[in-house]
Amino acid sequence: MATKYIFVTGGVTSSLGKGIISASLAKLLQARGFSVTIQKFDPYINIDPGTLNPYEHGECFVTEDGAETDLDLGHYERFLNVPTSQANNVTTGRIYYHVITQERQGAYLGKTVQVIPHITDEIKRRLLLLGQSGEYDIVITEIGGCVGDIESLPFIEAVRQLRWELGVNESCVIHLTLVPYLKAAGELKTKPTQHSVRDLSEAGVQPDILVCRSEYPIPADLRKKIALFCNVKVNSVIESLDAESIYDVPLLMRKEKLDERVISKLKLPHKAEPNLDSWKEFLGRLKNPTDEVNIALVGKYVELPDAYKSIVESFIHAGAYNECKVNIKWIQSEHVTDENVAAMLSGMDGVLVAPGFGERGFRGKLEAVRFVRENNIPFLGICLGMQCAAVEFAQNVLGLQNAASTEMDPNTPHPIIDLMEDQKEVTQKGGTMRLGSYACELKKGSKAYSIYGKSKITERHRHRYEFNNNYLAAFEEAGMHATGINPETGLVEVIELQQHPWFVAAQYHPELKSTVLNPHPLFVKFVKAAMNHAKSN
Image 1 (cartoon, rainbow, N blue to C red):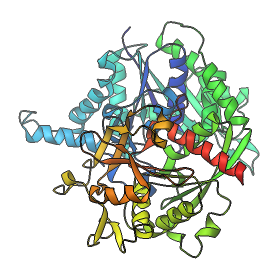
Image 2: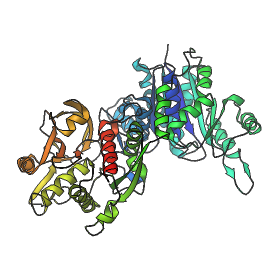
Image 3: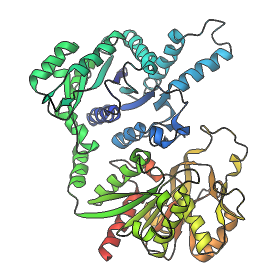
Image 4: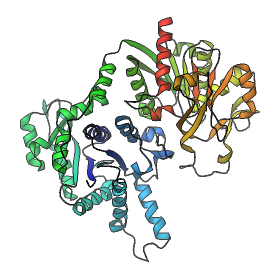
């Protein structure tokens, strides 16, 4: 079977949930036995989101092959339980960069380089790339931004051209839009949807299916009105109500028969009904917890929870696994001091010190680590959180005054955390960190080994600084053990405190590999430790 293509566009406003709809549809099609992947095309001019402040764009998700990508790829992986790659996220910046590089190399034989055909041709090439691998029956492409945005025009034009080239029944366009409720008028309004579809149609793309986000159910007469004015069939007007959890959306879309409409439009073979038993089992555990814990997330971007999206979702996965509701208390690390740390962390059953970059909030993270270490509260440190654990231990246990990371203090007499050797000549910021999946060997008998149940693991990284092995002997002697080591470089990957109920910190990002069907063992055991702590208190 030739690969079929689904394009998901959005209108009226951003943040309607194109990524969740794309992931939910993919889940339904996968549950029917189709091989599916999803890609995200972002209209911003950055090459990738790696250099974007999390307040600008939320979390930067990292793939197995080391691509810094949009956070929607995290949703794709969590729903499908299949890794994504560099090919699954493309930006305007990457498209233009490639075309300009080609022009400089003389690839266009002196022709004038233009948006059409050169930019649109490159977009089409990328759109088809995953489908041409032969691995997938269906490729879903989410087009970022809104129809009508200047930045989105080349992508919409590329979709128009590609649909014509592919032929009838080879592609499908799903347009996500908003049907707002006007409280003063007491009614739902379809006009924003009509205008959005008109804008898309003026660009030469007629949607096949409309997914209408709404706070209230859309009655049959309004669906008929939308269908009439937007030139789609009534049964292709899909209602998407606000859901209690993003993980409810596949079942809601199944109820609305979104997958059936797509199968009909693409003339796909009717395979078995979607098998969602494991998904429903997960939802059952998620919604019927028997325990509850309070876990503090100490970070510098807590005003925007999307900055820690994968961590939040990992807690949901691990909580469901343990049939436990995880209440996250967001703590701005800038506000944590020696005087208030006890009050800020009181009542917490566990504390996670989050990843991040830069000096802001670093001191507060050190105070949080000190408090949990001294009070035997379960602790998980990730990336910078692991580095904070090492620096705090050096300062307060080893007595090394002014011990620090050279990221925060380049002149520290005790560089517990230092710039990696292969990073010292790097000047460019974008895509130059230690990125992607690397091996790690866990010491038998360690807590890390018992958590994973094996000695050889691989985890994803995103950092420039590492633990300074010159201090490793002193750390080990004082009770802080390096229990995870990269076999090739000797890089310390995991540290844990021997005389503590549960104190584990990792240089890598475990949250990037947690999925609905495979919750990450570090989060599963951390939540379990928090449950034990809650019971003991």
